[in-house]
Length: 429
Length: 119
Image 1 (cartoon, each protein chain N blue to C red):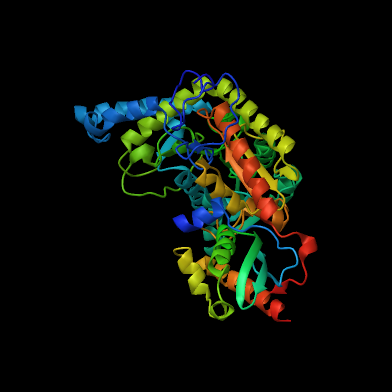
Image 2: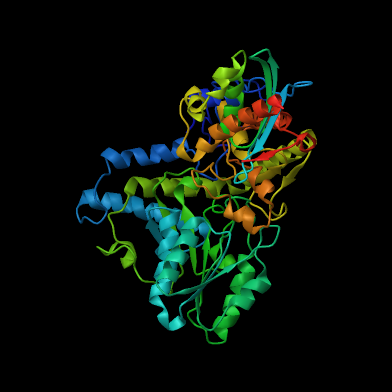
């Protein structure tokens, strides 16, 4: 498959074999499966699976055990730790393995809030954070903390002025995500870090900056030193690694209160027998991400831009949500006028294409996207939203099939819609 | 999440469109979610001979609108008076609790169209 991701391979989703030398705009057949929801999760690469397998029945020791079985497992864990550290330009001692992005966010926020009551009980975050951050902040509010939830501009990016204005002498932690999972918009973390440094120089020693980088690690360069953060969350299953594992970068010298108690694992920062297969998978995925970062980003970004350009050429009344020039390369969030996003999603699913929407009811929740709502999209724009998210495995052919399906389905849904002129009279139920 | 019946009606909605010179029109909107169904029917004698429907909203609304037309075309008016939202739901297999209103909306569209025809 000429358009498949380079080197790191992967067979991609099941798809009828067709030459990729020319774009093939046939509509997909029922046995075609096109996965365009990589912001939700990604397929594990074959190399990752291969690296994990021996951990199940060969190197199965407990990494804390003193004997050879344990030490061999431990050595695999430490090798994975070095890979994750290298990916984000940290030292291995600054990487704590946890059970995923959600736990990393919980550990960062609860850990800092509990450790630094002398730094105050004020937290700053944004309205567009992942629920792992928002719900954790809300829980701390219940326990007496004061939280500022910063708004975002129409382009989905938080304003630096708003951040600066929100910082008080009581602020212990600022948590702003690196790239938003719905729009892909990249937040001004380096600039926020500069504000934090300024405050620290003026005496606010325990003000910390955390970023949830779950959607940016492995997609764009993420360097903890350049970003200037004290804490950073990442998740294995977003970068072709396994689910159930992630990591929290904790800058040397940053003290936080342990959340998982029951052992001295992870330099006494997170108790629990190491998930060796998961950690090994994360390490291998991190290594592959680092080796292929640039080429992946360029190819995926081009495919995403091609997709958007084509959608807008073929369909009227479509807009892109989120700052187009400040995004991670794999996410495209669009609003289609006069279309119900959930209906579009289900119709595409029936054609073998997996996407996501910000419309309510599609995620099992009854609330529409809090991110798009915070960006002041209208109710209709939120309802008509579609998110596609690509990966290193996405091919040009898959994008062309998705385009054909989206074009046909949007046209059909729009045609089926009663027009405004036909209201004569519309009864209210 | 949705039954094969719902899926089928979303993939291939039946009787989409608008009748010319209909005997009755029922156009109803759920004010909570803004789902809308517009039904036009032709009545000949005491039989509903033709129907077309337009709909916008979440998948079960589209499916309910489509399956409604199958349930009513060729039926006697007396039978239609007795048609319930349960009949619509059963024709779709089942609907999640949060989507029961879609079946209700379809029946409201039918009632509105029949009322309009009586005028």
